[in-house]
Image (tube, rainbow, N blue to C red):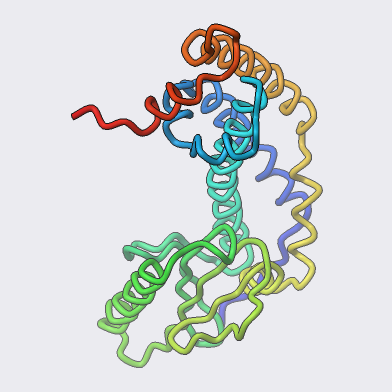
Length: 249
């Protein structure tokens, strides 16, 4: 049976300090690379008209915030999944799997755990979950080709949140938040130990982001007024809807 090693706070801190900068850099890069036209075409103009929005900034800012929030969830999810692979490697000699659809493998109690990593528990629709199950079945078959008696346990591991229903889904386990981090580290408190290191240089990096954010808001407002303001500087909703939804052909 492989030995389980305690993951120290210093090891978590080191990983965060070496990798969290990538998340902050991507936030700024994605923000600065965004174009107003693409933002306006991705959002629902009818919704904003129904909310009686009257100024360009009141229209653009919530659009931008919603877009950035979605992107940040994805980017930070990538960071958390990388942290999970790292600490599982330290604690359980976990390794990146070479099997398609499986992110992580480790052994314990004569079992081979195969893990599909997700950021949070509400990550997919029914067809995506079916695909994950199919990936688990194929991975199990591959692993048993070299060891027919191998006990394989498939796990959908979610880095935050709770699994509110039963965790055993028959052909796989779904573990979220505390239960997932405990599985890969053997430490029931580990999910609380990673929160403080994430603050590393966060104020400095957020100040940098907000400077870029303010410039983008100002640029988009000026561009929007030039394209979609009527003669009285109100929002020309007809032009905006045509830009968003009119077919070119």
